[in-house]
Length: 227
Image 1 (cartoon, rainbow, N blue to C red):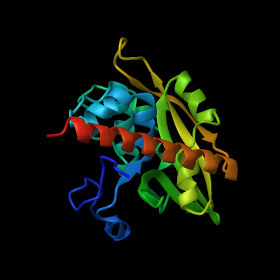
Image 2: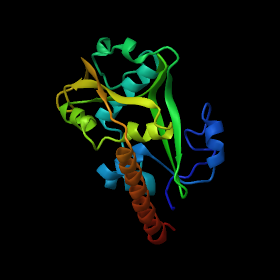
Image 3: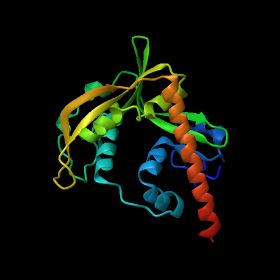
């Protein structure tokens, strides 16, 4: 598999606390679930960034998602260069669970390559395991996470032997790039995600298909455009 991403000691996430999990995979190609999404939604940008090496600016909506995600992971907000508002609306008690792990690494070995992912929130409570994704967005994004096509937490749960209750903590976003500043809404709710064999197969097939397509494009690019 000729993917543009190969795990090395300089890979950005090859660090503690992930080293012991990752060491057996050094030198092997990998794909993240976020890359699967990027390829299927924004092929041109994926090729520019991952193959050609052109660094593209991060969109304002992605910046808000990262800003909120880091706040949940750290328990407080960091720098706010984009001027986001509504920080008082973030319900930290909902997301900051005792003993929770944030950005928990999962690995799925697919033979020719492996899948990496990072669980936003993982914790155990009342003898149950919970695997949760945190998303920000408007109505359209909300419907995406309610649909059968949303498979991220399904895939991550598969990596943990299907033992978890999975779902999305959805945080409503107000305003837009044409009507700034973006605001964190007080409307925050849980979207359950069903886990079953059919959805696992759909998720794995999607990743395998995407990895094959990227590998083929990368092979062509290296043959004709790399000097």
